[in-house]
Length: 262
Length: 266
Image: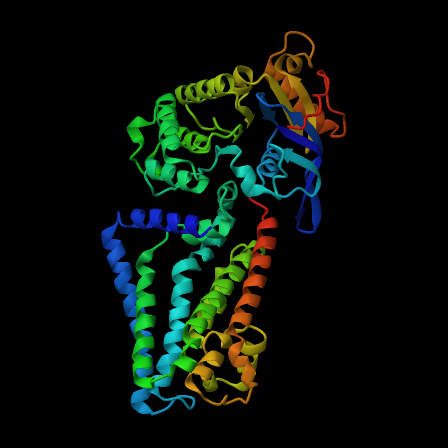
């Protein structure tokens, strides 16, 4: 499955390279968009020294880990949102007659490597933050764990959004509210939001496990909302639970596909 | 090769249940060339989609190449080729040969085997002139030949075609028919095709099945189909007769001049 994924990605990358101008413009566009995100945080810190009780380096750490997780999921799987077009046009039929998982086929279809720009940007912010934070290794091990868990959580959100399209047929925006919405939400310390929202993204839709809870551990900070300490270690569990729900929903969606008349 | 036993598929359309296919039973043996006829909305495409694993049946039992299509979809995909006349399985923006390369990757066809089969299909279907043309710039006839090639690169023992000759000019149509006839005769590929073109049926199929209102209305030879109406009837007259008579009384039992095909386990 991984091999097939990589082979397909390579085939599509070669195809995209046949249009070098559009390829270059999209890459630049990606850099500008996420550059603006970071500029917003800079603007905030020119007016204040802390955001939700966190200083610039800490905010950059939370931003970097969330952005990196999101960018990896975006690069590898966000194309799944195209499924709504396939369902409407009935072209999902064609995907189903091939001997490769529809999820892999759609994720790789017209794969555009320019999204790698966002990955580099997220990683750069994270490196910048870590250079100023001086995190000891006995807490630093959590960083790769949280990035991996965050990537799985965002991927699961995309898969759930895709699965929902089998019922809604034409509402990719509903899914986007959770994926892009989740990405924006996790860019800031969750302490800037209300307690109800934070509990919601901890116990219901586990976005707090992308970077907030494990981030508190890495930064060695008390939870401003006083939630239990052990939550900080639950990111892999939350990611596994999300992945399981997403796989089941996706399968149910494919089985309920009704095709179009022809 | 194909076993269908009391197959049914319903759809819920705004609260009411519509039977697209009901109580459909037939069997197709290896090496057969079967035409599948029926008026628009009779359930032809729904049947094809269930045979290929795209749609799950709501009732009945189904085996294609020994597999349950909706549960073993990816395993089945390696054993059947599917061609949709109305939509392409090729990648719209890519040159034809890149589409074939993607098909090779998806079906994990060995590179040497792939080269040999592609060369063979290219000469049989005369693809050489437009292998580097993006699919969106191909004529319908060229695209259909490309689609048929893509469906056969993994050398499936069964080929299912949904209206493969729709919209083709006389020359393209003759080319496609000629190719399918040879594929069935020389390669032994089992072929099931749906069509509205009775020329396809007369020239290619030894056996005809006619579906209407989701049920089998006829299953037999082309000669048997003609014999349904008295006198020297053409195949058009026989088919029209069946379409109209089932419209008047959709519950008439199917005409079965030929004995039931023996049950198969293949």
